Image 1 (cartoon, helix red, strand yellow):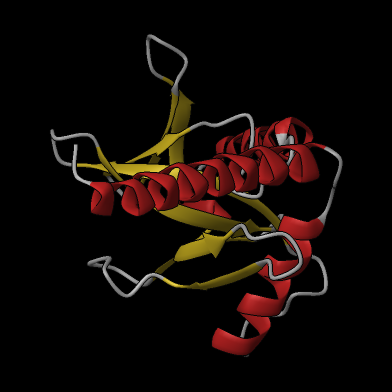
Image 2: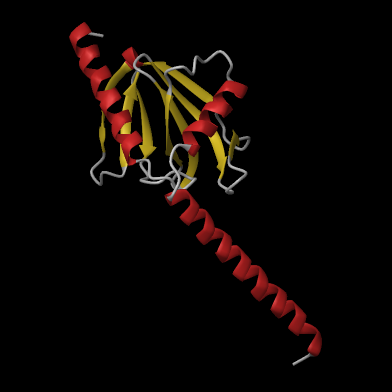
Length: 176
């Protein structure tokens, strides 16, 4: 074997060790943190969409499947009792440099729906997707227990489902 290939092998091994160490560090750091995603989401919304009142907004991360090839778009769901915003955003999960930026590669930027426009909501057969029917259009949201920052977001997801359930009950009572 040629002597000039050994430095490349050593560099490859060192880069692999660094990459896996970073992955494990991000996972461990995310599991021990709570609320970083929401804080960064609020910061992102305030900068990009200053017209949105963030005083009582809650945030959760879902993925929107697109196409049959398994491609997904990360989606920041910002909501309160009256409004629902679905925003295409890319989280950058590097500890110490956490941030959320616009997804320039997505075909969409943001959708706004008043909660009164939700007609139906429920889970698919495998309980992996949450489906919203708004104005006759079906929106499929892929559920993940952890957000991109590796924070457990189960509590936030449950709050989102409860808010949607309350909106549906209110819409039924109002015959909307």
